[in-house]
Length: 314
Image (cartoon, rainbow, N blue to C red):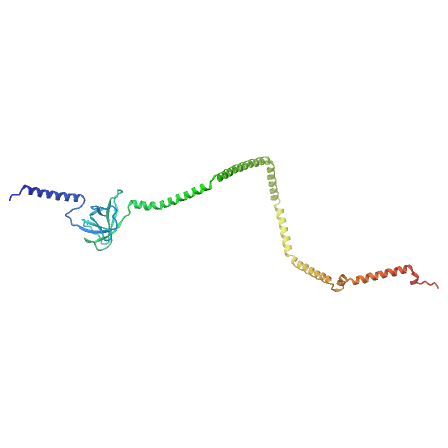
């Protein structure tokens, strides 16, 4: 049987195309002749994830993303993962989208779980999305942004207050205050110079005062024993006073004063003979009348002595 050239060319072309496809997939790390498994992960967003992006475990490529489909029922995205490696994947593993470089390239990393049951082809894994570098920077910058806005608002308020306060009158008052402060400082400086002059002029007297103080100190030091003796005598006197019956004497004096006060009160009230003499004037009147009568009698005796005295010789 004779094979035509067209058939040979077709067969060779198909073989070449198959080898090309196999070579391209082999260069990508996938062997179409190996057994393949399909796992699924559902995401609310994929953030730049594309078909044919790699699926890795601890940095090792074990497959690729064969398709990305939108579920119209709940607006989720279903990623189909074609696994070509014989690595065991626990059923509770997590399919996490993460950025592979700073240019925004994405891949899916399988974080292997600890379930004893291994995922089978057709199972759906738990999904997770890593924060992008921009999101991380945004989260870090957000507090700084809030602080910067607050600081800008504070600065704006301060500027407004300063503009309100420092009007023309306030500036004039401030200028006058600065002038007064300058004059005060000048006066203080002048007073300091005068004080220095006084100290220089009175240096001799100050030295004499210091010498006198030193002399007094020496005298006190030399008479320390005498001072101690005086203090001891004073202490003895204080002990003697403390041991004396001064409190009893004061009580007796207080009682005597109280009795004298009672007597004076009775005299003032006219009680007793002495009280009657002090308060009743009838005795005074009687004494005055008696004195007056006595004076008349003495006058009559002086003028008429014969009436009262008789002399007889025989």
